[in-house]
Length: 161
Image 1 (tube, one colour):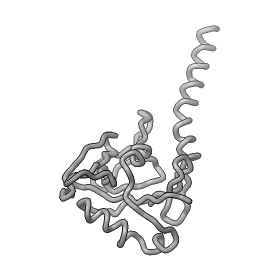
Image 2 (image 1 turned 60 degrees about the horizontal axis):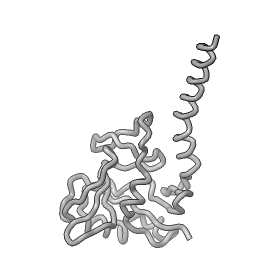
Image 3 (image 1 turned 30 degrees about the vertical axis):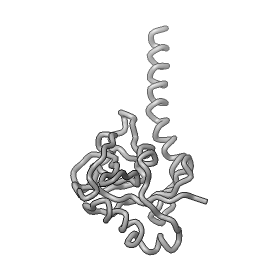
């Protein structure tokens, strides 16, 4: 009888542990229904999607500042490239979360409210001719020359006031 009780308690605990990250993600992020997602923990607003194409760092910066959907720029000012630390918070480390496959064929583990088209996203963290890139397939970051495109994307973010 004790073994059965312990087994049931273990199963219940396992179910709770596997559900908690999804619930926390839902509580932390709100899809605003207008192409944006609000991050209540960091007080940020993210674009729900990236630029949907290979860009070098300069092109990513220009896309965020000048080409990013005009309706969102008019509605919400001050869009920019995210910092490395901000991007790291979007990566889902939970091994139970399978993520989703992007259009470039990578499986990424980013919060489900945000849909990127490939796994590498430029950051605003620059040094000389390099910038930091976050890889949502592996959950790692590295620096790359700003002139490289290699399936890199731009994901706009802005601070909430």
